Every structure is written in C-alpha cells, then in structure tokens.
Image (tube, rainbow, N blue to C red; front, top):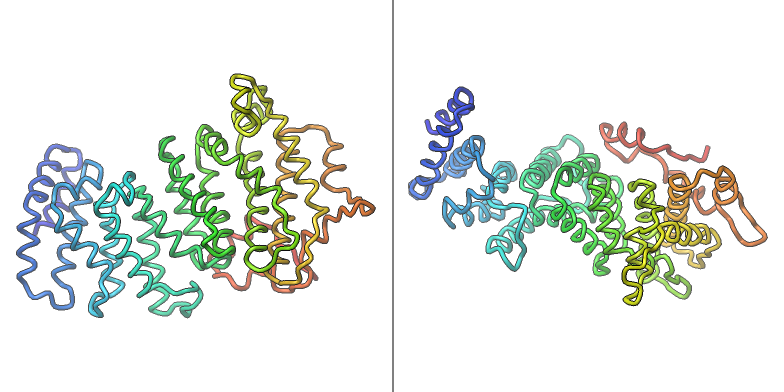
Length: 433
C-alpha cells in the first residue's frame, strides 16, 4: 500500500513538491519502526528484504533532496542492513537480490567523503569486495554467452555503474575500477563502462572533476598494480574521463602531473627485464598518450599562449615567479621527444614487452600527430616529422607501429557482437592480408 501510495503521488501529484516532501518525511521518520517490524517476520527467501528494498526504491523516486542525505534521516541500521545484504555470503541471498539492493547505494554514498572521514566507507568497500569475490569472474568472457551467470553478472555490473553515475561517489568509482581493470582489452562491457565514465564526469563542478582525475592518476601511478592493469586504468578510465572535463579542469590536472609526464618520457629501458621493463614501457606510453590528449583537448590559444600555465608549471623555478613561459616551448620540447622515440630499441624478446613497446611507439606517434596538427599550419612539418624515415639515423617508423607477427591481434572476433559495431566505428583495424 505504501508503495502504491508513493507511485500514485509521483504520477498524479508530481508538481506538488510540498506534498511529496511531506509524504517522504513521514515515511523516512517511520523507517526504523517499519524496519524493526520486518525483522520480526519470517524472512523466507529474503521476501522481507525485497519488500524493504521496494519500499526504499519508491521513496527514492519521490525524493526532492540529494539522495545521499537519506542515510542521515533513517538511522545507522539502514546502512548496516544494506551493506550486509550486498556483501552477504549466504546462499539464499542471490546476485539478483543484491542487484536490487545496489540500486539503493546512492542513498548512502555521495560525491564527498573519504575512507578517513566517513564511517560507512569501510563497510561498503568490504561488502562490494565480497560481492566481487562471490559473483564476478576473473575474466568477463569466463561465463558462457546468454548463460544465467553472465546475465546476472552483467545486470549487477550495470546497476553498479548506474549507482556510480547517480551518486557521483568516489568509492564506487574506485571499486568499479578495481573490479573491471584486471580484465583489459576485450571486456564484454567495455562500451558500457566507458559510457558510464563519460556520464560520471560530465557536468561535475571543477573541484570534483579535479579530485576524481587525481584519484585516477594515483591509481595509475601505483606500481603495485600489474603493468597491464595500469595500462587499462589509463586507457579505459583516465583518458575517457578527460574528454568530458572542462577546460579549466584539464589545465589544472596537467599542471599537477606535467612534471611526472616529463619524467616518464625520459625513462631508460636498457638493462631492464620482467615487470620492471613492462612498468617502464607503460610509463613511457602513458606519458605520450597524455601528451596527445593535452594537445587534442585544449584550444590553440592555451597550447601556444605567451603565458601557458602548464608550461610555466614545468619550466619555472621559484626564482622565475611571475615570469611568463610560452606554451610553444612545451609543444616544441615534447614534439622532439615524441619524434626521437622512433630511434628507440628494445632488446627483449618477451612477447608482452614487445607488444608494450609497440604501444609506446604508437603513443609517441599519435602524440606527435596531435601536437603538429593542433598547433602548426605548415604542411612541410607533416612530411618531415610524420611520414619520413631516416634509416641512416636508425629512425624506423612503420615497423614499430604495426605487429605483423600476430594474425589475430587486430581482429574483432573476441568481442561481443553488440560491442563490435561501436568499436569499428571508432577505429580502423589494421590487418595483414
């Protein structure tokens, strides 16, 4: 009856905000009593939990204030119940029920807070970690197509992504990355994840965008993660996010990391092997990938301005306070670095390292293309810097960019059919005929 009442009010009285708010306040004030009554009933197959989920879902539907404020109005028992339900290891609590409960996460998790300032952080982080352990595969392709396990997994992941978008929660962003980043290229929900990241960052205020980008950068810069995981964090999350941030956010982000980018571009890979080599190659590729985005996302007047804030952050010293730094200096410097990459040599025969080296070469070339095309109108620059190989100087280009030893590298066959169309539309597959 309560759910029907809220549904009726929402459909027929949506314009009457005061009436909806009064109804919601009454129900929120009565939540502890309703919850206590539900605990006294036989919760066979979780029927009482489902009723409480449905009740709160309808309350969310008519809520006129930020959803994360609901947790302050219903008391700590609500947070505890929701976390225990999502993280339950009891066999009778199915992934389908947990998926319904996940819809309520925005009533607890909001855009602010950290592990040190919010009491709920640890309990929900633990609950979501348990959810992943019990129901998520190590590789998204592990479950057979159209199988109940795959359908349940995808539905649960989609609800998590929606909860992240609605709540703008940094905790959910971090947890979803940890859940999905270990599965790199070929994730069956790649397009859905990217779309969710785009919607998550779109229209956020400056401070929030800066904080979330910094958190993504910190995750990428953490060498405790495997090199392939770090590569996925950069490609799938950080670079996708940058395309949906404001100009002032992008400038501020690059001011914070430009010295790290500069340092990464000069990393030496000689004498390295194993993960040490792979981490270095990921750093090198990431630096030029971010240079590419810097040149592609910002307008020319910022890139080549007489007082470029990013260039000033890189080149200025405390003695140079107030002295302008031309943006063209940074453009020229990184163009030279990107061009010199084609002379780099990889001595390792390890297949993973060889592929990371190829991606590093591609990233440098793409960065050079972006730097030239967005800041220079001289057609000769394209011929000299982009298409000319000087073999006498050891400047080899095309052999580094295309891997002709792997017939399956550029095929789309491993992807889900509904994902293939979007991917092909964005990328031209290079194949060895």
